[in-house]
Length: 368
Image (cartoon, rainbow, N blue to C red; front, side, top):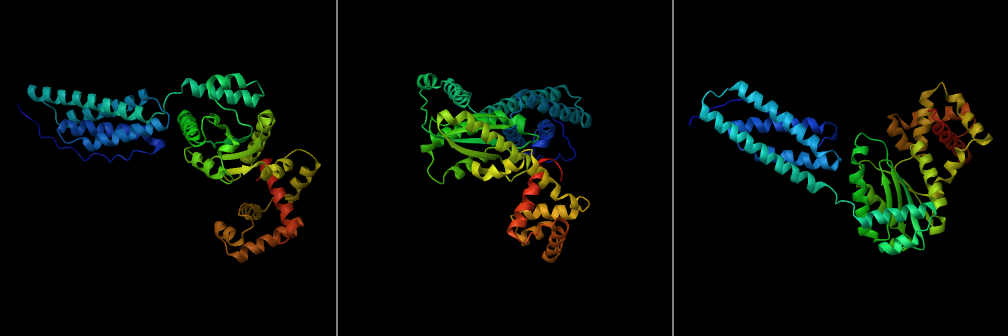
């Protein structure tokens, strides 16, 4: 039999892992696999890259059918290119090449399917479904005892109720089932069968038995769970007994919605830290007065930006100046102008309190 000596221009390097262009990575890798396989080259490195893509694909919650389609699109393009550059006129050589392509396609589909399925979370079993139903019943104030006893799920005398909010992102919705399964598994592993969760694409609610987390450990636990999400979440925690959970859940999620509207930095916040924000954003005469306080700065966006950065940096002068890329003296000059135009002195506690409150109101109502 005759073999063909093929020379192609170099294939593009594949850099799998960019969620925004993962399908393009798969297509490029599939094309290169076809080109290298047609030549009879070693394709192990390309196979490994495609397996890495498959794991990324599963982590984002994308369907296996779409992965296989992307591989086929790339492989077809590579095969067409291979035969166009060096057509095989010898029958024996054509048969060998065809068999090699079939073997490669079989191998890549087996390995990609294995890599994809191994990355998926374990399917939700009846116990996990029961745990979710117990959590729903507790948060609605319904009778949860019979279901909990039947499922072997202990009900705690007190819970850390954690309202979790996930910021919007391109991959958030697709990854939601995977993220929820991972958080649920991690929570159960750390806190036992009595830890409950209800999670979706926007976030949800965790019910962590009070006795399962020692003093000062809750922040570390939530930080570990946050590492499993695509983007850092914002969370609000309140301690409540089972009978108090419906009201506590509503209050925690109201505060969470306020915090996310104000673009407060991601992290875990006790409910006491956000009470003032909540009150400031409720309609009424006090909010109207604070809303008008910064009106004199309306035509001076540099001053509004400076004041906002100063508030966000907890009134740290050097950090604010560095963030704005200005000299600290320039920052001082701008803050003095804020004082002259609003009547509130940022150098005093009372002035800072009023300015910060006004900025909270302004951000909540959508005016920047």
